[in-house]
Every structure is written in C-alpha cells, then in structure tokens.
Amino acid sequence: MEISIMAKSISSKLEKALGDQFPEGERYFGLENFGNTCYCNSVLQALYFCVPFREQLLDYYANNKNIGDAEENLLTCLADLFSQKKKTGVIAPKRFVQRLKKQNELFRSYMHQDAHEFLNFLLNELVDILEKEAQSAKSDPETSSPNEKIANGPKNPQPNGIRKEPLVTWVHKNFQGILTNETKCLRCETVTARDETFFDLSLDIEQNSSITSCLKNFSSTETLNAEDKFFCDKCCSLQEAQKRMKIKKPPHILVIHLKRFKYIEQLGRYKKLSYRVVFPLELKLSNTVEDADIEYSLFAVVVHVGSGPNHGHYVSLVKSHNHWLFFDDENVEMIDESAVQTFFGSAQEYSSNTDHGYILFYESLGASNKS
Image 1 (cartoon, rainbow, N blue to C red):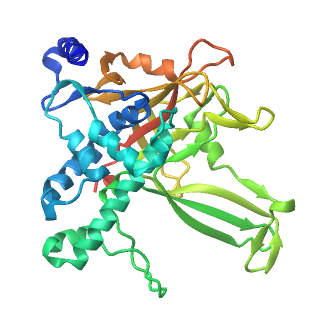
Image 2 (cartoon, one colour):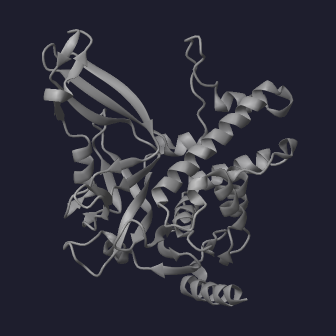
Image 3 (cartoon, rainbow, N blue to C red):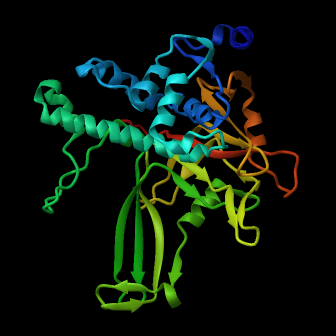
C-alpha cells in the first residue's frame, strides 16, 4: 500500500515537472528494492535508456515470444520488465531478481553487490541465451526463418581448426568493441598484434584526472624488461619489448568502468578511491588504431554512494529526450544537467561527498555504427 501511495506522488510530481514536454511513448518508472538490489536497479535503468539495446531486445522478444513456448530465462524476464505499460510510478522487478538469484549464487546473499559485476554477468548471459537459441534454431529448421540465420551468422570456431565467424548478436552490435594489443620487439622491431573483444573498458583512475587522461594512460606504451621480457617468435628468445593497447573497433555503446575499488596490501582489504575524475557530456575517443576521433555522448551514469566497497548504495543518472533524470530505486526525479558534475568525485581525500560516478555509458554520435 505504502509503495502505491508513494508511486502516485512520484508520478504526479514527475508528470507535473515535465508537463507537455513528457516524451510520447516514454516510460519513467522507479524500481522496487528487495533488500539489497540497488546494484541491479541502477544498471537496469541505464540499460533501459540505452535506446538501441531496449528496442532490439523488445523486437527480438516480440518475434520469438511464442517459439516452442520458450522457458523463462534472464532475457525473457528482462524483456518482460522493459515491456511495461506504466508511464510512471514504481515497478517491482520481482521475476527478474528471482531469476538472477536462481542463475548465479553470487547474487543470492543480502551482502552489498558490485554493479559492474552484475552488468558484466547480465550481458554475457544474454549472449549465451541468444547463442543457444540460434544453435537450436539451426538444428531445428522449422523454428528459424532464413533471414534469421543470415542475420545471426554462423557459429563459433570448429574443433578441427576450420574457423567460422562467431555469432554476432544484437548485444554484440551495441556493446562489443575490439582492442588490439601491439608488442614490438626492441631487438628485431617486429610488431606482434593480438586482438581481443570487450563489452566495457575498466580504467585505472588518478586524483584530479579526467576520462580522457585515463584513456590515454590505458593506451600508453609500457616497456617489458627484466622478469617481464617478451618471447619474440622471430628472435626465438626472450627480448625487451614495448607494449601498448589501442582500440581497433570502437563500440556503438561505450561502457567505461572506473576502478574505484583498489586492494591495499598493507590493509589487507579493498579501499574505495573517491578521486575526482571528470567525465564529459561529449567525449572524443582518440586512442583508436585509425587515429580518427570518434565522438560519443553521455547518456547514463551508475553512481556508487558510500565510503567503502562492502557497503553503500547505487543510484543512476540518465539522459532521455534532452532531460536528465535521477533514479534512486523507487524514486525518480528530474535534475539539471549541471548536477551531473557533482558526481565526478572528491578533490580531497576526506570529503562528505561520497557519491561518485562508477560506470559511464556513452553512445556513439556516428551513424556508421548504427547497424
């Protein structure tokens, strides 16, 4: 009863604030917290306002809902949650949370959970579900249309060494980028490049820095010497080398995880770094292989509130139709764009401000990625 009264007051407050600017067909709902599920709620809000992801999820769900009465999984629970008809108010993501706990014991306890771990688990789980469905559709031609097979492409590498292209799902199309790890032998100057895919970039942070400087450090050249020497295939021996990481294929949705929790050996535990790290509303990504600047626009921030890693709270800031909104479980309110900078972190180590940006979601402004 209490929730519904609160939901009504939040709804009317929000609808009043937006007035006739309330975007047609948009939904701004709070999510009920089941004890410790703020880590889940904050990430779900960020994903909901990742419009290409939401649209493709709902599209996939609408087209595959009745195939052999598919069993419930995290994908169907997420699509069900995102299909809400409520314009505002509060929704209880009960089925989704129950399914999550059933699927992964890590999230079963009432301990404080990590929002980044949850995001990682969810995206990988969605990919697994889509790959299994594509696989079973292939073995049962009745259930899959020819278009679907072409759109999804063939399956992963075969055991006999004949490489087939891995399946590219709509999760990959939104979030996956490719990093290239270049290692240059300092004796023969041969450059070895190894590619790896990513759904998010985890960046080391420094006090009074910015996302741009963190990205530069991520791609800075590192010398491998002493015990870290590199085995050069051409020299057939261990050699000193230079190594650097560059972005070969930038993703459509760039997710940046700030490494705010650091293990301090002297303390024997993790400590939260409250460092001030400026994240711009518009980001130019320049550490790419092509050296072409790619522009991104910030649309969501998952914020960790609290002084330590094992307790605290998560909230999210979201940009939708040029308005910024603040989601704190059941509460939803409009905020001014200038309020975003209050979540950069603290310039002094001991500060009363413990609300710090933790996961940043940027969308590419280039049309070329929107396939």
